Length: 435
Ligand code: SF4
Image (cartoon, rainbow, N blue to C red; front, side):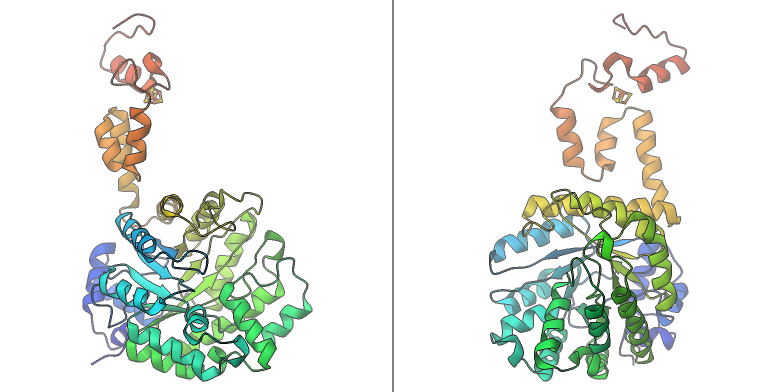
């Protein structure tokens, strides 16, 4: 009856996925359907990922977050990666990208598809290197596409392909000096392959084949930004803009085949450039949902890049980004451990929620309203229940017991909330005396 969610929407068919998204976002089903048909909302929903919960991604919806994980040559512990998955799902991450680049990647990917309710994403370029286990120069264009197809058949909901860095963009990149060159892992692999073989980017040259695979399995394309800036000074340069224009053209071609698209964005970017960058993307890519990797707003805080990214992410989402890729404190330094993953998720969720309040997303302010009421009543249990990280909030209070139960050790008997509540009830407040 239909191939993709976009195809269904264009036939005015309300799918089960659209109904679930409408209920979760408190929207009319017909509105969800209209936005999907127009490409402004996507529901990544590979038909083989049957345990998946349906989430929509679009600037008018709650901002969603993605958690990256997966094995590397230096850290090959599948149990630890599955533990990260469990934490990520428990903590409310809507999407997980498996970026495994070492070991038995297909077994891990299939386990994720079988067990993980979050939306699943991959970057098949990484996996191709593991799968073929041969020199980059010897991988053929057909082999790159075959791995893409394998991920689609395995049940991956969205896939990043770096098809914007074609030979023309690569040429522009080489003409423009950059401090950090290409920092996208997939982008650098594709650039190297083009340089070594002299061939066009296979995902660009055979984009129609990519679209046929996406259409068959309902894979959402995440158009990767190989030329995303890797430092503030490289932000908004010609290579980044040239690639964005190509991504805009490819978006139109994908929509013509009813394939859902999200666009990947920066990267490192100064705070004052973020609004303009979001507006440029929305204009060039006709409102396709924007998936930002940060943006990291200063280069000088290794060890704290969950904070630099949350600042940029909040601003980007407030100005129209729909999907935030989390960044952990280990960014630029090492593969994150479980605690780093938790810190990264909380930081991203704070950014997403702050943006939802700014955008006026339905229900976003209610949470803060409830917390404010609990604080006003000095209702500690209620505050813990509402906290984004209840365990951390409870632990802080437990480690520093106040003299009076209805205050905390910050102000003790000078607790402004307690004293104001007493005053307004007509009770006497004597801070120096026991009362
Ligand atoms: S003691 Fe101070 S910081 Fe603690 S709840 Fe009261 S006003 Fe707030």
